[in-house]
Length: 101
Image 1: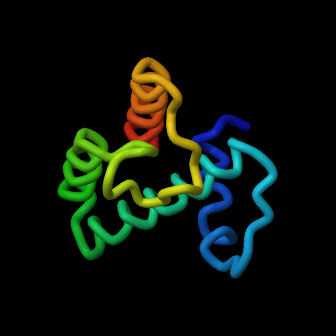
Image 2 (image 1 turned 90 degrees about the vertical axis):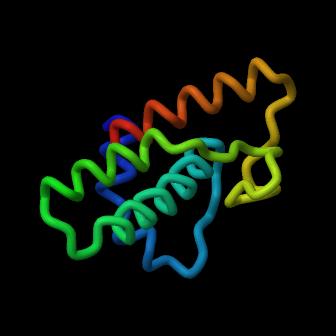
């Protein structure tokens, strides 16, 4: 199962958990993307399929904060990148996942 499939498959159960036992970086990414899918659903609420597709594509292309940036959604939960290169790599990976979701 790839990351996108896992994000979508476990979205509903993850939204219902009061606590979540984080066992590694994959779990942290899963939590980050659970919040992203929630944001997607809020944006497309009551839209037609065509409009929702355009809205989701636009959302995936929006600029977003990475760990260490002011305003990052989960400060302290996901470790800050140690270098600019590591930050760029994280942003590239997350952007690709946002587009696939």
